[in-house]
Length: 218
View 1: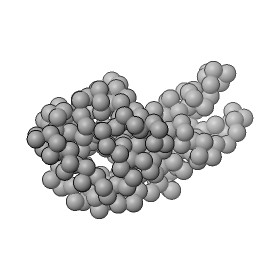
View 2 (view 1 turned 90 degrees about the vertical axis):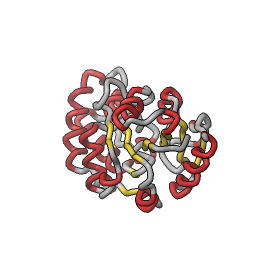
View 3 (view 1 turned 60 degrees about the vertical axis):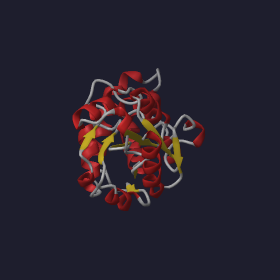
View 4 (view 1 turned 120 degrees about the horizontal axis):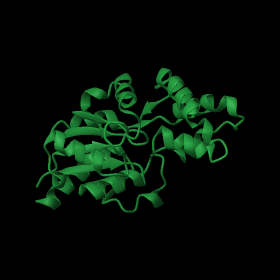
């Protein structure tokens, strides 16, 4: 059974958004006497959506400020979404050549921000569907966003692949019953990606993996 659908994570997989997220985080935390985070600090916490990111940073001591910090974060981030964000090498040309597949983005970033980011970077045109953290009742590592895409696009799980840079992507893919591909250039180290069916160091290797996965499923 050939692969018909490829589902992609966004941050750390298609686009390096780490600097813009870090800038928004530091802006939102300014009134709370919390030290500025470096990009390297922030990368370790990115992946579960803005609410969880803010909760991790504030901890129990400052948890009362959560909603205010989220509001300030989103206010700044929505206005500076792609100041420094860049598409990873080989992503654009590879997506261009994957025109035989349906393609979806499944992000733990909010849907409107995901779509805007993709549009700003001229990537939105490659995707049939964009799902964010607020599109479905649960977000990755839940399988629900993936199942939502499968149903919307009329694809069986055995005909789909999930591509991402984190253990949340791999766990969601396995729960949904789809093949998983981990990219090693993103925000998580290889040790977190060992449960993936396949692992690639560069995005241009994805078509080969899709061909291989399809042949293994026949």
